[in-house]
Length: 79
Image 1 (cartoon, rainbow, N blue to C red):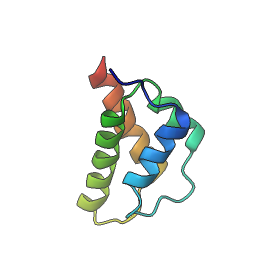
Image 2: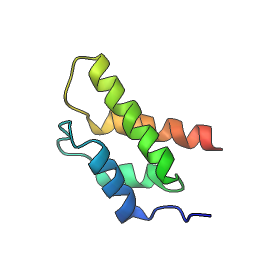
Image 3: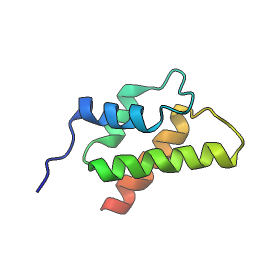
Image 4: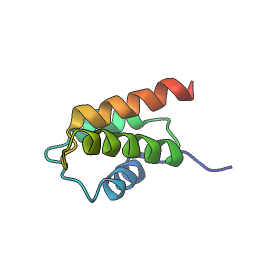
């Protein structure tokens, strides 16, 4: 069994997964609070969902609100 990622690892996972995109001024304290309790796989899924939304909207930028919504969706489905 694997331990859940701490905030440092969670930030690293999200940052690496979203590296191909612009992520200006992400509100890390809010994002990491929403990421609490999610597994590494769930963090990757949330990142992928945020990236997919950006691509479908013809954007290379992922704002905090998009990533936050994806993290909250993963929280809801993890319950």
